Length: 152
Image (cartoon, rainbow, N blue to C red):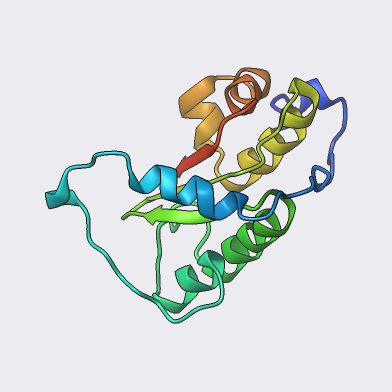
């Protein structure tokens, strides 16, 4: 992981700074995702009594990242922080996948590098089996309103 963090020139960069969230941004982004056609046979709708997507994942017993982290409360704590800082909302949770709607994504490569380091800590496969480097992954995050995670 140290080589993945090399673009930041820090061992532990800390969290990316919070960004101002426009009113209703998360709702607008979620509505946009709902308009994307999907195969109905692969979608299951569930309602979970929770105050946020992060809490809903814990309440429903989601175990998607078990190959990386067995304590979903730790994952939920990260997601709750992203909800606060970026307005990120869980919009889809699969067997080993998670998709977030992000109304205020990083706007520059410098901002995206810090966010990419957080993503890599949560889901190292994004770098190792995906983009190949932290910088390449960060480039994908600039302006991206959807963050997708998977755990093998």
